[in-house]
Image (tube, rainbow, N blue to C red; front, side, top):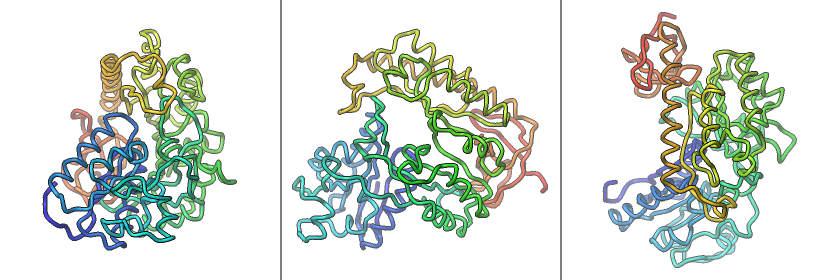
Length: 432
């Protein structure tokens, strides 16, 4: 991070795809507010490591650019507001990260009725915004990522109304709220108008979309498919929320990509119970079997936590076996880390070293299965969305591809797959 005054706001996103989408709203709001020498850290708090990375980046910014307005927002800001404020940063709550008023000037000491309503009172000498405690969750506006990727990340939902024992999301983002179907469709059209041919729907608990209204995720997908979208992809889904209508879209609609990422978290029923998850191991295995029977080319991804409190060797073995039982080729695997204020933090811990070792074992098993899956695709054809560098992209099934010769960025092209190199497939463009 270089020193000196910058012409406009700099936004640094951490964590999930939803943050990437919301980061563009942060950038637009800060720019509209006239923010110049401003750095906004849009933080994540899913693990201790994610929070540590934000703290490290904030300290560096404060040290290297002491005259800049250093702002922290996002989930880590919600959970550790006082700590970031004590460091010398301003804190903007998640609900206010896209508001122009949040970025109007470094010194926020002036008072007004509008500002008092926004902030709910001052909580530190650095004029941090008041956070989750005692405030209602606000309505959600769709969030659309920028043009730095050929794909557009479209945030349609935030918050969560479940009570998983390991997760601090409901503390950081409030209860589940959804954008309206009309607003999502209008926002998707913006991505199409600027030449982005693939849209990825994202949210904190995407499958709960519409629970706060009369909409459903399947209805939203159907509405979006009325637009000339060439490729539509869904981010992480709770397995128990894939109803018949959504299942049909995932397996029968060619413009919905054959790539399903499931929020599984564990493969042992006792661990799932202690996590307060809403599915069991057999449910996940049966769902994947149904998906693949209906659409064999579907690639399965999954979130998995290693070393959850009370997890013994047998419980871990069940999670390890789930990688094969559910044919997981895209694993989002991380060691458990206790989040303050969650029930799991009060359970008997297995220890960080054990959690890290088990996560490494899961990642290794997942890598072997992914590589075998990628190897089997050599000699086959696919279509590839070409990223901004002209040389990389993703197949329909989300396999990472590299071209032997550059193609036009943002286009979808037919390719023939030659071979795997590490985690990517090498492909050659084919004549249309």
